[in-house]
Length: 66
Image 1 (cartoon, rainbow, N blue to C red):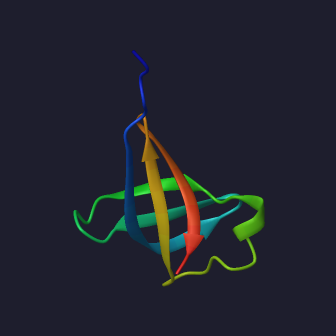
Image 2: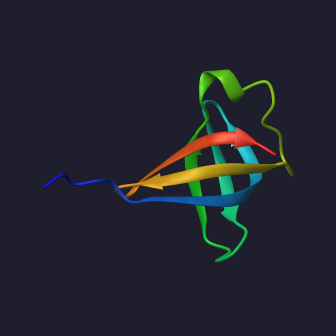
C-alpha cells in the first residue's frame, strides 16, 4: 500500500502583505489566515489580487497569482 497526500486546491483574496507573508481570505469559507509568499511570486502578489493555494496535509502553500 502507498499513501498519497490529499491536496485541496482553493482560491483566496490577498487582504494585506507584511514582509514575506500575506494575510488572505478564502473565497468560499471567508476564513482569514496568513500564508508565506514564495520567492517567485513576490513581484506579482498585491493587495486585492486573487491567489491559488493548496492545502497539503494541513499545510497551506501559495502556488499561483490569478
